[in-house]
Length: 342
Length: 282
Image 1 (spheres, each protein chain N blue to C red):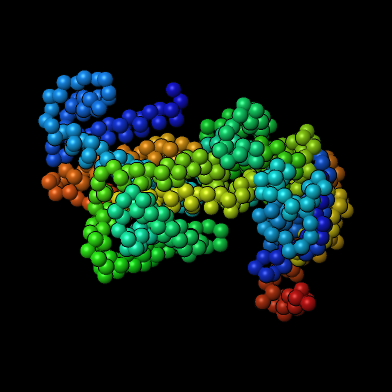
Image 2 (cartoon, chains in turn purple, cyan; image 1 turned 90 degrees about the vertical axis):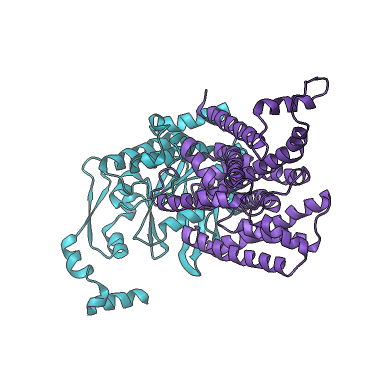
């Protein structure tokens, strides 16, 4: 079996395992065997003897499954776009959170909510669109602030990211504090405090994330060429304008959809692509899809921790990812000097 | 094959290259030489389309380069760059594969035919055994050969090399240039290379273009360009030219003893130097 095939197999199996864990563990434990029979019971024509409590079905289908789905999609979107931003900026510390795109998307989403609170599916579709707008504006601003001649050095990238991110976050807080009761409820959400519940947000974020991530997965070759710098990339026949536009749009779309429904969750987009890179190498044709799978697993794990550590109290998942991710960030910052695996 | 016609290039509003006209035929090696900072690398960046022209024209097989897209241009011109920004973790195979970018499309789908071309390019540059090594593990000479393989995989009739022998020792220097020379003859490439070393230029180039102060000082066969008169005036150092004992190509010997007294004194420290500087400004 090829190394790349094995990589996909491992990552898929890991994602599946963590997904099952995430669905079965909670205030009420549903054993994996029962999970399987609950699922089979949904199939028409199969007659399964139901020896489980009646509440299991509604816990599984109304709460656990949509929650796990939204967490998986969010992790996938953040890690996929993180890998793409790293490739685009040729900087190992680019992450949707650190470069401020997530905060920009958050501001856009809150603006969307401030205009009118989403009460139906159509309203839910509008939030990621506004978040997308916020994300695009932020990434353009940060890129142009951080650029020095033809490269984007780490120092200016992080500085610009922090400054723009703080600005967007303050604007968001301002909007929330002086507005209606409903928006104040959104504060917990914005800090990465648990996703919205039910299936509607899943359907609302799915198209955005599918489009964004599909484009990123298909852009692996272009990202590879880009790793040799813009001049060499042009000499190899890659048009910089088109390439950058496609990558920025797709990465920001994925980030925005994730932020719109689960708030601002940091470090997933930084940590996951790095771990994948260490294990499976720098080839973006595999790095992007593997990061997407790994991102789903990682955020599911973080979410599981957030739910069980102080049970029955649920921590915002952003706290868990930051607790793990911030030390990792510092480690990468030191490693960045010896760029052996980058 | 490659025709450069009264090219002007500016950088931050300052003119770097002025009125450069050179042409190169298929199967010919043209070396561009000149003092540091004279704009040799800028010439390559301008020809390859990554630096805009102020005026003038670059034509490839009769077509104006400015009318071509980035993708089309990359099918005619391949570049082995000097300031090498290489992602250390990429393998040699992954790197040479990128030379096929002009033909692969956005998705980068590699066909069997592409693989054959990549393998051939690696054979020609003796990099086949390096295929699975990472760029960061390679020596300067090996990296240079990998970049040459990538340029060959691009299958372009024109090859531009920017200081291909920097950081190479004597053995790898002549190894690389012999390789380049045989490739040019075999594939009938038109090759422009920037060289620092005048003796290597004399030995390997069919013609030499000498740049001075952003202008084309002289162009022609090695013996016509590498003359004592030309080089002393361009490099401000007296030189002797002697024929190569085996090939008869010009060898340049700087006259060190005279240079240290009369020419190497920093201008700010002596009235003589100050006058020299003042003359240059005029």
